Image 1 (cartoon, rainbow, N blue to C red):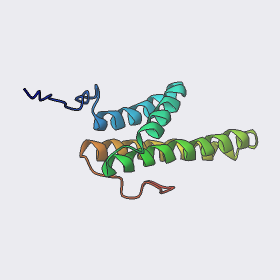
Image 2 (tube, rainbow, N blue to C red):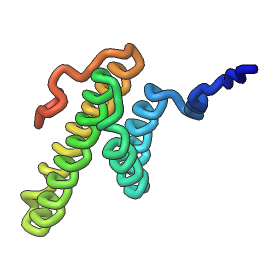
Image 3 (cartoon, helix red, strand yellow):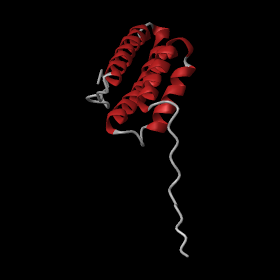
Image 4 (tube, one colour):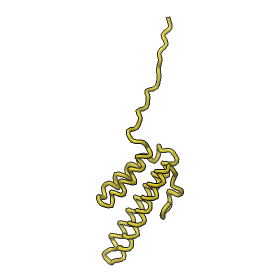
Length: 125
């Protein structure tokens, strides 16, 4: 008598949140970050964790989000330091407009499931 065992790999659990929704939530966290700050930090951590195992379209979004955070952090740091001599105020205004455009552009592209054309850009991608 032969016993055949039905050995199957365990089924992978379905994610609670889809990858597109997770990328969109990072953009939303960045938007909330204008008021809280900490939510943008949570968003960049999510982007750093997900960038390696994402499909190419979402990888471009995560790369874009990571650069948005770190370049924005640079703008804010320089802007606050120079605001003592009033030069920093235009830098902070530029950061706000720049980051808002990047967030809106990213949300629209993610919603349409399009990649960011140039996720490593210092401007608007």
